[in-house]
Image 1 (cartoon, rainbow over the protein chains, first blue to last red):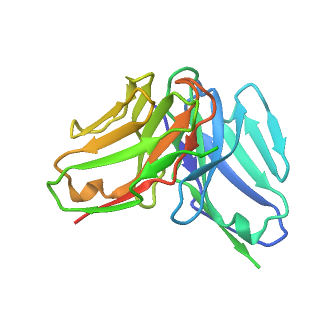
Image 2 (cartoon, rainbow over the protein chains, first blue to last red):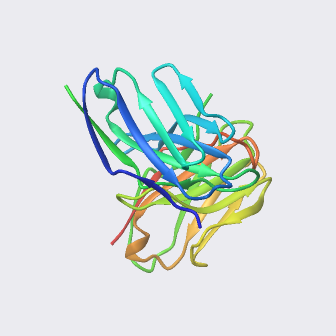
Image 3 (cartoon, rainbow over the protein chains, first blue to last red):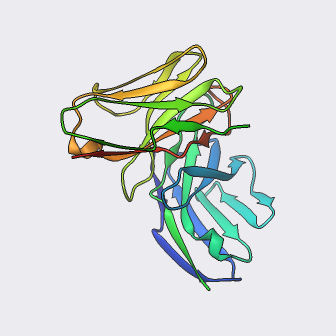
Length: 111
Length: 113
């Protein structure tokens, strides 16, 4: 079956790196995503990675994928107070299939 | 370019009533998906429409229905509202049905009392 799991909370100091982890169970997942949700807002697509990749870097964001362990992580370098939000991991198979989300990780950045 | 727009932003309804939520996708995008996000949970898939046809349906009762119009905008209808239907309803827009990137609107916050 499909299931995406994330730890619920993470607290870091401003300027430190944040690492948000996610595990998924569907080995046929083709795309893996990270979305950010600020209070009272919709979801903002941060980045995504194809399952045939190990790593993707985009400015302060680094995504690592361990397909063998079905483990995805999002590293935010030099974390700022504006990064405080809920971060959702999501998976999707190829073709016309919906996103399957985890419950989200609430990141709190302490000044 | 405008992003995904949803209306209304907030809505309060009474149990048993019916509600219609609206979504306009990004210009040039032909696929619209609807998700329900209950407080403290991740979004759950309700429907996907592409080229005005239903392409996928999640595990929701028949009280939920949707449609897509020729201009690719979409409506989500929920009949016989229950307290448990209170949630943030999110619309996602993508260029095609199987497109990699899906962009979300700000959502409609529905409260059922």
